[in-house]
Length: 357
Image (cartoon, rainbow, N blue to C red; front, side, top):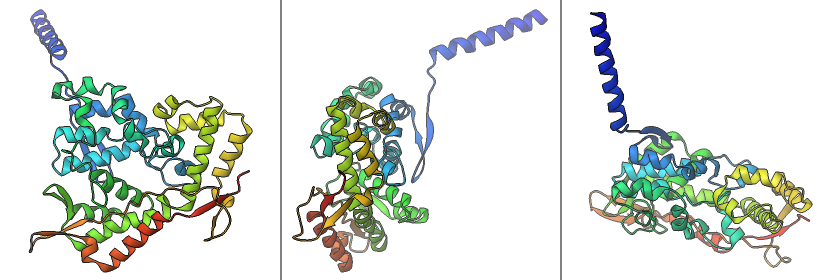
């Protein structure tokens, strides 16, 4: 009897063992986003686990201000998951979801600092297709009959993911909300309210509430002043570009390092540098407020004038009674005035004189 039971147990075990080898295990995961939990199915989970995607954990959304000006940190990977949540939640197909997840994969260390270092606005966009070719993405998505070319963010089919300014898009909605939450410009309850009144309809993002549309559209106007187009931020970016150009000149950092390293890996390379110029510039960047001043109109000669991108958003508001879309600037004169004022500021950036020698 015992031997029969042992035989049956062995047979069951062997069958299970054999099945485990011929039946693929479906891997999935639930990750956190600023909007709530996000379930990654097996296809998205494989892409999420790529080493090039995981590198984004070490690339901060704000660049060097996160390290030298105490800006609250959140990573490009956090942002990518936020964008995926929006595309998925608002009906994007698997192709657009994959594009959303990898849309920032080509960001260099220190994010947009590379635009200044290489003198190419939106540098990460210019190398995006090339960067995808350096990854295993083609192999991972071939079962979906897709290639890297099919998931480029500029694909006109991806209207949830990308839209031109001043429209909303998943990318723009995500980084505005997450940054504002980190800086305590809005609360978690504000995030829920914004999402509850947000819609993707007739190929465009819109709000069903004028009040909530204004709450959201106020965010980029505030971030222009306190972060993206602040003098502090501009000076830190400028000094960082000087540091990196010097490190390139000394061959302590390469272009490949910028493309494939994390922020901390570059910071470690700079810390190991015994060059007095680099050490002096890093020390200035850490206490940037002491080492520059904004020149008044007609005063002196600036050391540099930053180039600001106006990131103001003028969202569509849907009226369920008239069934029409209108811009917030058409519906709220006070907001329209502030919108124009912020745009004018970006078009006439401060003239900055440095004291870093």
